[in-house]
Amino acid sequence: MDRSENMRRIRSKGMLPELAVRSMVHRMGYRFRLHRKGLPGKPDLVFLSRRKVIFVHGCFWHSHRGCTMAHKPKTNADYWGPKLQRNRTRDKKNLSVLTALGWKPLVIWECELKDAATVGARIRKFLAA
Image 1 (spheres, one colour):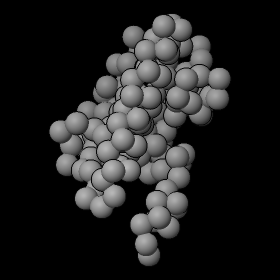
Image 2 (cartoon, helix red, strand yellow; image 1 turned 135 degrees about the horizontal axis):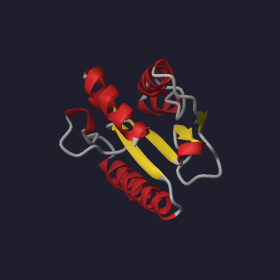
Image 3 (cartoon, rainbow, N blue to C red; image 1 turned 90 degrees about the vertical axis):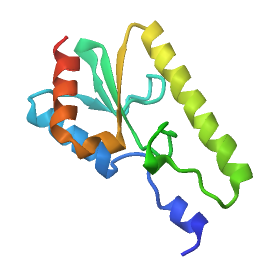
């Protein structure tokens, strides 16, 4: 399978890290909306009454600094370098716009889900505050 076909198969919603967080939050008893189009960045989980949102970021696509899962591809570097930088810039802008609108965002990285207990504690603390 060539790279373009592989990349075409990657979806933006409903991936395993997002599903894991959704399941975890649901088991905690919280209810949420998914991918609200009216909010910057279409957050993965939206808690309307609390004015809080959770983004579940893939380490590769969002260039998680210091993470081994966030490597830059060696092929077609002229494309991937700027592409991944645009993603980081867009994420930063979306977080600041959300904050300016009175929303509190939480970003959970794909690699953090290896320690589900710690992520669960972070989410519980974030939603309880």
